[in-house]
Amino acid sequence: MLFRALALGLLMAAATAGQAQASSGRFCDRSHELSAAEQDRLLRFAAVLRDELAASDEGVALVSRSGLDLSRFHIRYSHGAVAWRSEQGAWSARQLYYACDEGRPRIYDQGLAGFAMGTDDPQLGYVSIVRMPPQAVLALRPALLDTSRALHLLGAQYSANAYAYGLQYQNCNQWLIEMLAAGWGNLPDGDDLRQRAQQWLREQDYAPQPVEVGSRWLMLASYFVPLLHLDDHPEQDRAALQLHISLPSTVEAFVRDRFPQSERVEICHDDKQIVIHRGWTPIADGCKADDGDRVLSLTD
Image (cartoon, rainbow, N blue to C red; front, side, top):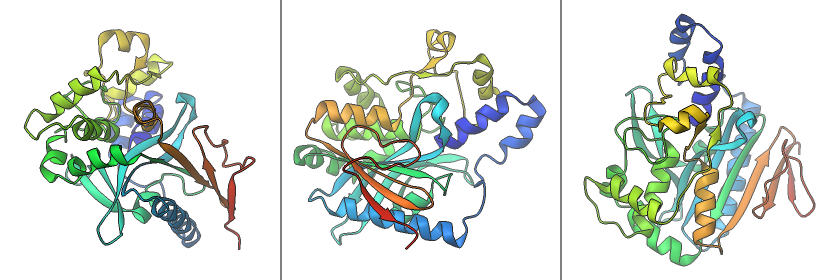
C-alpha cells in the first residue's frame, strides 16, 4: 500500500488538481489482473518463502515485500508484517492493511501465497525474512497473538507516509514497530498503548533514517492523494524535504541492533529464476545471483 500511494503521488505531483482527484479513486485498484503464468510464478515464489520460514525452529519472523519501483527514494521494501506459525503448522502474515471498501485500516492475517501475490509487479519481486533469536520470539509472540493489544495498537486513520512518532495517522510498518515495542517492552494492554509503545521506542533510540523527497512538487502530492499526508510531520522535516517514516528497512535495522544474532534471508524472482540470498547485504538489483546464492529455475 505504501508503494502504491507514493507511486501514485509521483504521478499526481505532475497533474492538475482535477486530474488528481479523478485518479485518486483508482488508488486501491490492482494495475492489472494476473495471468496464469504470473500466478504460477508467484505461487512458486510463495512456496520458497514458506520453506524458508519452516526451516527455522522459531514460530515468529519478520517478513517484508516489495512493490512498485521506488528506487529514486532508495526504497526496495514498503510493506512489513509478522509471520507466525499456528499450532497446526500453518504460517500466516499478521499485518495492518487499508480496507479500501471500508475506508479504514484493519489488522489482517493473510496466508503466505496471498502475501506474496500482494506485489504490484508480478515480473520482479523481493521478499525479506528476518529470523529472530528465541528470547525475542518468546517476548513478542504473546503480544502479537493478543487480539486486544493488536487492535489497541491500530490507529484510526491511515497515511502511507505517516510520521514515525505521530499518533494522528499510521502506516503498516508503524503498526509493526509498535507491536515489537509492545512485546519487547512487555507493555500491558490499554487505550493508550500506542503512546506507551512510542515512548518505549524513543527510550530504545529507534530513529528511522529520513526519506529524501527531493522535490517540492512531490510534496504537493499530499494535497491530491487521499492516503498521503504532511500535517503530522514536523515543520523542520517538511522544510528540509526529509520525512521520517517507518519502513521495513528501519524496522529490520532496529531488530538487528537489539538482537545481533538475528539472521536475514532475501528472496527475489524475475520471469526466469528465484534467487535466495543469505546475510545482511542486499541482493543485487534486478534479482541477479551472486556467489553463494541459491538459484531455482522458473523455466523448468
